[in-house]
Length: 349
Image (tube, rainbow, N blue to C red; front, side):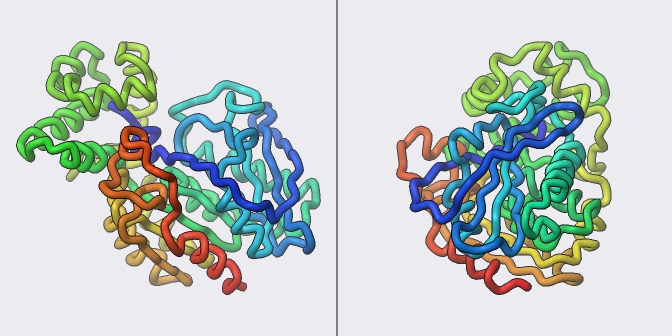
């Protein structure tokens, strides 16, 4: 149980910093629905281009609550505009939020935003950059493969082609001090549940096969906070899209993008990939290796990782999913993270 919403959830931290930009509200249409967005422009110069902020998973309140403010201001400081919007059914965007929105559909949504920037003749909108964390690591390569206007990509805590929740579950149980044999049992039950759901198995069959998992405190908290109490409706909402996907023969994990390595190998634009070395949400070392073996052969690829930093590139101790929430730790960006983005943007042509 649990698709990419869980494994790629990317916490949004709002930092109060001096604004380098001027902003304007700019909406666009996608699938007959109006999505509410905000454009940030440099105050005293024409922008070099426009960077789209592509969200990770979950609901958004990006426009009203000034999400990614420190990152957007850093990008503007480097001379680029930024454009960001709320997902369907979130903020002032119309429509209904879909927690299981396919990554391919999210990519089409972003392309609709690009088309609007061009139609509105936003300055330098013919030079588009992409920024995105976690789940956006699936979306942005698809956008690049479909749109020739993309000039560069900034990937934060990127993902490989498969579901990463088994990694998240195992690592967070380890942090909590659960014994290895118990971790293996819980993770294997989660994998068994995936197989049952994928094959069309009933909710009852799924629950009977995952009894230890369903009694695990971390899992129960995880599901309740993001979905509510586990029931047949939640199971069905997860199962229907899962059955359309492929399970990897070796690992049993859902594959979200077929031929992902080929898609990455065809990326020809400059890429900046930043990782936290204490990321307990996604296996950053695996993604780093994937990037090197694909994009690293065909384009300018810059990779940088940050010691003692989590999935959100915040200074941390354990990188646990609930570390900040439970311990009320201060939200502090990793030293050099914003500088790395600014310097890289200043260097690319």
